[in-house]
Image (tube, rainbow, N blue to C red; front, side, top):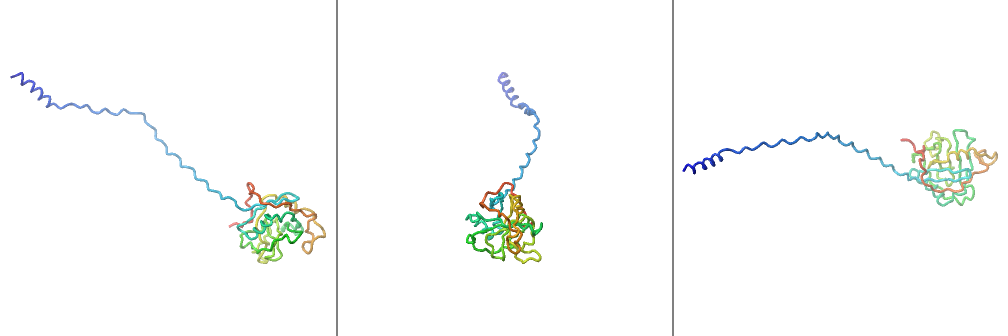
Length: 240
């Protein structure tokens, strides 16, 4: 009887004593990672540069090459007329025939045009005053020659000084002025050379006497060319 009671007491005691559960082990400390700085912001995107779509023309002369930029958007009528002569190759053989050295340092220009068969001229074009185009007759300007507004055909000026009196809004002017449609971007030294070329003492009529080149300088070819690298900004577009 005692033998049967002892196993029962042992079993009862075992059931009454709670099991001891060891505490969870503390996590092992790893190496301390340094704080990472945030990445720098990306650089700003470059501002896209609009391509220069203005036409450029190389005038290959006896004296050298003069390159001009044509303001085809600001002076579309005058520019289209000039390019029509270029594209039809009618400007080949035109002459630089006039230099205004006799007008003094404030009014320097050379003039070119058709000095042969007048049938090579296209019809006259409408006048585009500078107050409408936003252009100005500054040094280097390419301007249309005329007698009266609306009768311009093939003749043009290259200015070698500022001639603000040619602008349509010049004080004391005729209100029409001379139409600017481009400017020299290369070969300004060639234009100066033509300006300083010999003058006939007798050729010409009226104000042209003492301004006629002798010999005249021939434009051998006039062709469109790509925009030259680092073409200057120029001055014919009025600031503001």
